[in-house]
Image (cartoon, rainbow, N blue to C red; front, side):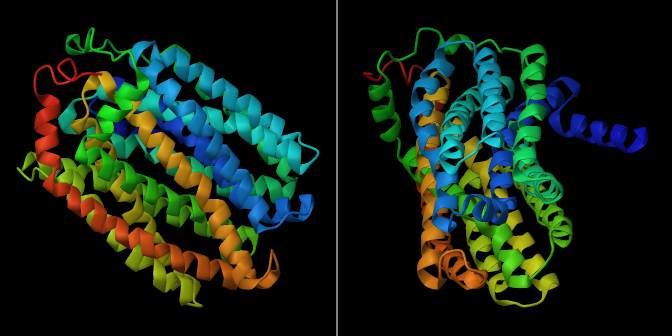
Length: 440
């Protein structure tokens, strides 16, 4: 049993650039995985939640919407703290709060109680991203960021898989309450590990004294960078689509293909594995092309990935054969995931280090707004097209998914436009005194 683990540990160490960096990758990936596990659990337990609490698709979507919406309130102030304070300490508090909120949700006796627990979960989710982005910027070399981000973002996919499969199996065996409580208790381990094992990096000397006093002037400055505007919108659209899938994909497959929880538990890892491949390969290919002189690789590859994801997803909605649908959905997952490492690395490229936390908090606000709107939008369209929560509502969900591939396809074009501004914005971000010479 030790040999596969040793092989995996060795491969991760080699991919990350050494054991110390591999440890950082695992810790940050674990934190990202918590929010995905929670969202995945909501999707896996959708049927139980709807039946047990007597709610429809729209109310189910609201559970995810509330988490994302309240995260907006936390993102901007935490972005300021990430640029000025000890980031590891903030991350420990965030993970501990997430654990408590998840347990509280499992103990909920009503829909309102469960909805309120999502408020705290949302605050934790909104606070984590700016801190993690700032840490990545200081802990890893710029030339390796897409590759490293591909590894760290695997935590989101693995977490979603844990939520969908493990929480789904626990819910089917016991109840959705046990699934929430056990996930909450298990998340205490990452909080302890982050506090003990994650190093607090020293900020570069070039960042000293360059922190803007005004949050809103910093936001205004960031929005004046052309590529920042394009990439933030593009990332938000991608997460909007993914949030809708994460919430309703399980319900759609169960009702459209009439599969059991056991069969579904075997299908989800296949799609998850495809997404992991997309993350790792997308990050590695992006940095490899960058090293070979393709200066715009971190924007052209995501543009192509979004287009491929939209094209691959549609056939899976209309086939009645599970193997064909699995291939289509797996290709879509791989392409959708492949866009994220490059986009995240590109944002770090075009923003001065002194503003990494606030830049990510700005992106998080718009991303969470998209994630907040997605579940309730998908659910509302599905209910309007074919009845609220009925067994035949798979038709409504199919129509909702199909409609939402249109903005995903347009997203590829939007990112493609960024290749015109990206090189100049990278050069400006690396120029001496960029932040200190701008009136903030």
